[in-house]
Image (cartoon, rainbow, N blue to C red; front, side, top):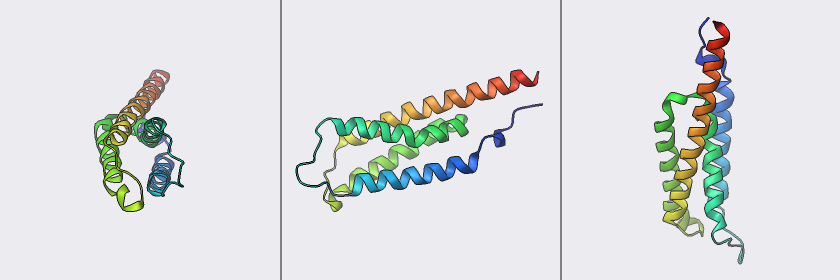
Length: 125
């Protein structure tokens, strides 16, 4: 018996990813109240948000990590480009933090997905 990719809850992964895309979009495009800037820590928030965004896809599709990271980085870049139209500031470091988070999350997801595949295959033998 060989391991099949369909054994993962792929539909749930896509719904979760779509919800995270909307949540990140809302959080990053909503104007901040006056005096609520968190200097420096917002880079950590970008890193974590994009890591969480891509982790499920990296787990479900470990062989497509490169494309997943590129798509997430483009999304993060687009957010930074349009943020000034929503009363927020665009920062290159935010986009870079999001890209680094996407890479980290995708690699963690990929590792989990490949590990799960290896376990399933070894159990089948």
